[in-house]
Length: 168
Image (tube, rainbow, N blue to C red; front, side, top):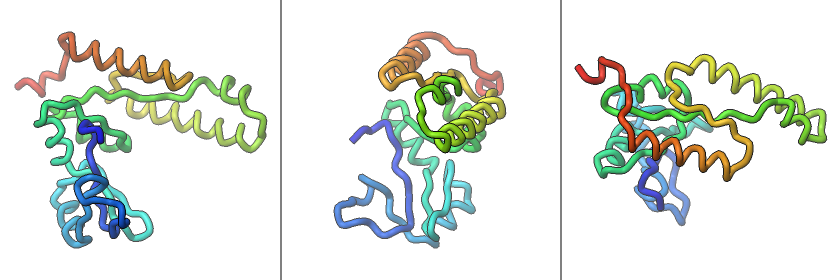
């Protein structure tokens, strides 16, 4: 288990092999709904009438242990994370250019889906650019991981500019 990751809360029943606090935090729907109203979640959603989400305290817990939280969040959560409390480094992983994707694909249906994905990625990067510290264009897994590791190492070993509102 990687202690840099947060665990989501969910209102679904645990599977026999799942352990509360290890795989998920299993909570009652009323409790989670109340906590959502009290803005205790970084993000949350519903699927098949089951609530799930990441608590802000889950992120704080990882941080207080001296670890760097690794989060995969919906873009709207960046507005909450971008604060003095969390001081995030945001990495946007973009798909390779569309012509490379289409060149490697043999199916017309796949090409249409790739074009849509590429366009959505471009829009997301444009809209959320003010929150993004690094863009990694994903060409292959090994290179992308190394680029992310290099960026994290560099940011932890050097001084960083932060918004003045984070200081005062």
